[in-house]
Image (cartoon, rainbow, N blue to C red; front, side, top):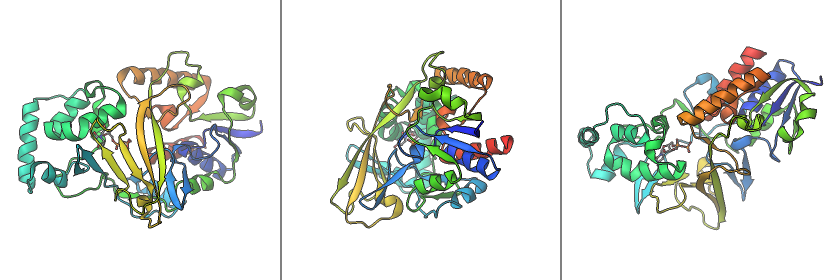
Length: 364
Ligand code: UDP
């Protein structure tokens, strides 16, 4: 065997694992279907602006070891994600906090906000939330649910909020302070110059082959290494033998505009169903840019079909059960699965890195 590890996918999981393996003296071949490394964290320079080609990636974590690890590969700035939401012409701060409540109800104190939300939560009468709608109503009440959650979520997931798992909305904090920080983690920032440099450094010392699809070249590739770490879609690995997993995909419409500042913020969400996209990213604001031009991306969610990129797992009971079947098949067949796509989990970047480091510690 020429390699100790064949790593399928040059995204965050594969690259962190490859780096750790090389550190331990292992020979690794990383193959990647796309013409570039980085998976969905890939960034590229357009008119002097770092563009997050596959959607906004804001690094945040409460894990000091993971934070120290990523800081070893890039300088992180002090960007704090403070998105705003536009609903029928009105602008609200996110996540749900005193700024949001002041705008929504013309109030100013936490006691007033708690009184209104408490009343709406009681009116909703949900004691044991079983889906996203019930979770949202029992957390923030009807006004916030209808103006800022329901239509956005139904656009994003293409499903009724009653048919979605509650955990999705638990990602968003609810605060009774004037704090617009979308995340509650201890550490947050954007790598200055983008994520691709991190992946390049992680992959130093490995052989990397781009434009190489594992499934299409399986017979030759499997002969090259003792062990295979696979970060692609698990259903595709087994020819969809037990059925297809569902994913949401995103269509990105990116434009270079001849203006210095288009929307005044990195992320603006459009929470009404009348607007067909979910959000507009203005990439330069991730790095506090002052370039004369700007690059914006509109995100249009859609159901995944063959030929699209699978971005979000649809973690309902049916899909989770199928994912578990494929995970078991992978173990039996001797593949090591990892990352957001192969694990079929809605991971943030820090969790992906942590999982790769833990796998490396176990195997190497
Ligand atoms: N969400 C919402 N309104 C918003 C933003 C988010 O209702 O303005 C809900 C929606 O259900 C979404 C979930 O919160 O799927 C998680 O949002 P997040 O921004 O964490 O998603 P991501 O950045 O991963 O797309």
